Structures are given as C-alpha cells and as structure tokens.
Length: 74
Image (cartoon, rainbow, N blue to C red; front, side, top):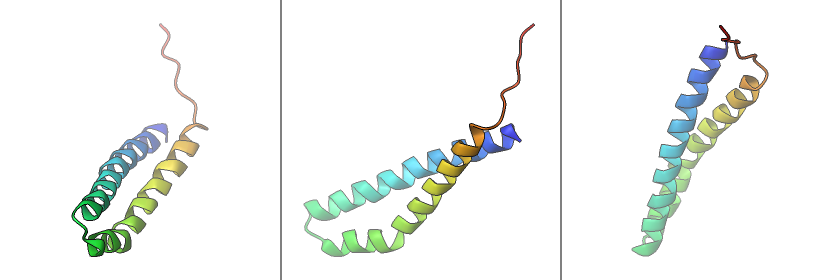
C-alpha cells in the first residue's frame, strides 16, 4: 500500500509543480504583454486541474504519513 501511495504522491506532486508553473508563468506573461484574455483563459481552463492535482497530492501525502515504513536493519 505504501508503494502505491508513494507513486501517486510523486506523480501528483510532479504534475502539480509543472502545471502550477505553466499557470503562473502564463498569467505573468499575459500581464506583461497586456493580454487579459490569456490570464482569464488560463484561470478558467487550467486552474481547476491544478487544484485537483494538488488535492490528490495533499491527500496521498496525508495517507502516506499513516503507513509504516519497513525496517531494513540487517
């Protein structure tokens, strides 16, 4: 179970960082070139996906904290 949660956590955090960066940099670019429609379109089309992936990362990280790590002494 821990291995599956770890894979979900790593994938969702990676995707969250990538999509979040695209969202922020795209909105920043829209502000710099004075294209308000870019900012609005990114917010309407990408923000909900970023929030969803962020919640998956948060819940999987929370559940991961309750799984025990195997002891590898020997």
